[in-house]
Amino acid sequence: MSEEVQAGDSRAVSYKNSRWDLVLFNLLMLARARPNQLIFAVNYLWIGLFAFGVNGFTIDAVVLFLITALLVTVAVVVLTLLAILLGVSARRNRTVLADHTVTLTPEGVVETTVFNRNEIYWAGVDRIIDWGGYVCLHPGQFSAYIIPVRAFLGDSRRRDFVDYAKEQIERAKAKRST
View (cartoon, rainbow, N blue to C red):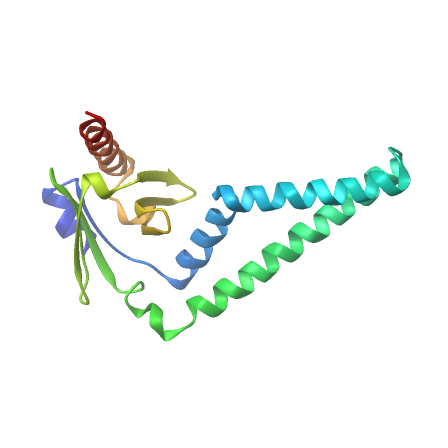
């Protein structure tokens, strides 16, 4: 399906997300999201205050801090992974796991599935991220079109897609600021 769409237009891509795509994307976003980074930083601060406040700045305190920080981080990631797995396995994800076609036009982004057709003007697109095996087109802070890199017919097609989107997003931001 990808090749049919992409043969004529490097600004259109067809794909189907797997459950693993959703799990991996959510784990990647866990590390990238600023609120999560802030939560981890505050937790590490509290752990450090406890470890160094009780023992002073000793090797024992450093070891206590590192072990506690590691345990807290692992616990948060495991609990988050369990929540993601429970959410991904639910039937309500059938629209996310369906075949998608995302097309970039001069006006905006058009996403089509068997369930819906969404059109978003460039002014409504926050950003595009090409990272971790995915191209993520964010029409809002808490939503994204998650396009696996494997959906593109090579790196040049992916780069063309991402570069065009970045150009249009910047153009829309410039229009808003004038």
